[in-house]
Length: 255
Image (cartoon, rainbow, N blue to C red):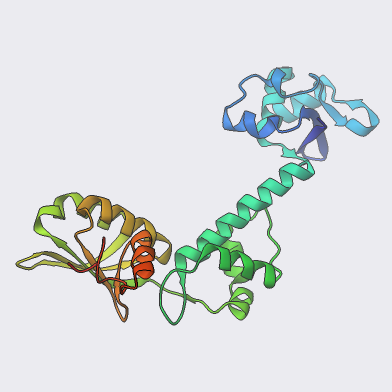
């Protein structure tokens, strides 16, 4: 397994240590506790390629100590790993997933106003030739890429607005889910139960429906403005196979 260099810069001086591949992230996550299990050798270089070691004076100037273990810990926690190809690829893939999740949460299909499938968003990123930076926040990258992505895949930034109706006997168990995923615009009661006007981010839609289905045993409706009644995706698929209309039967549909 190849080694990985970690570089820490203080002023004009570089401090470099050699670590075992994959161990730095594990150390930062707390999976590995001992620096001896991370570094290849307990040596701090100012230029590893030339074999130049840091002097005690240089360590004291940069770290206020020449204690090797303390200096190693500082470099491991705050230094810049020179990532291996495999590690960089994994980091890019994780950031790409975060960008897809951002679009799914805050954007909808313009015509139906429903959440966008993750696979389609990912394909749109590829088609729009979006370059993913593993070190830049996903929200910032998504905002910068939005115009290019919209050009190849129609979408609009939006919320899903509608009314959730829950029978009296399930209000207590279901309101936690409503509060967790929705912004409540208005709530009230009818002879049948609670009627709540809400706004929900598209990316929270599936979890909202899933949690409400569990809390009410399927006895609720979510009328999205301009749409048929919402229901859990699994039941939607079942109804489509049976030839039924979405929202007429099953969990989340009208009884």
